[in-house]
Image (cartoon, rainbow, N blue to C red; front, side, top):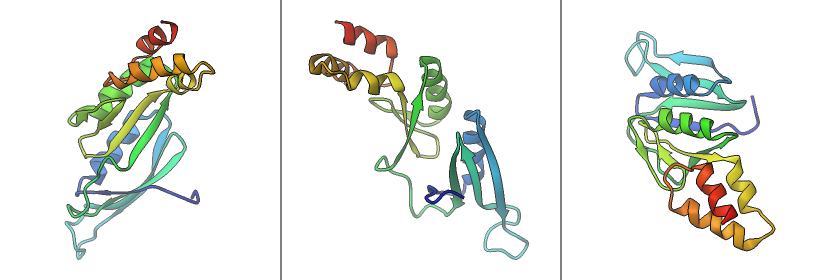
Length: 156
């Protein structure tokens, strides 16, 4: 196990979340699932916790109940190599959730994600501050990040 592992508290839908996340990301797997037994505090067979991996990152999911919902104060940042990857992840993760500004979305479980093309960071670090500023201004007008629009702003 890695030294630091994000631990995600779900409102009794952790199994559904783990199955969604491992279906969305190509390099992913479920490592272990713990379930309630016959005399447990939850329904027999219900997931207690699961350890899983997305693109080499380990996570733990817990069915903790409604006491601690997710907030955008913590989000998962996804570095996307292509616009196609941005488009696919954007649609799949936002289904049943909400699409926010500047590449942020909430999935149907309330977990916030940032779906960001690598190109954005590259353009924002340009030596020419005026170019970087144009890219920033273009990005601030977007919901889903569009690399074509970023490049147009960069070259304007």
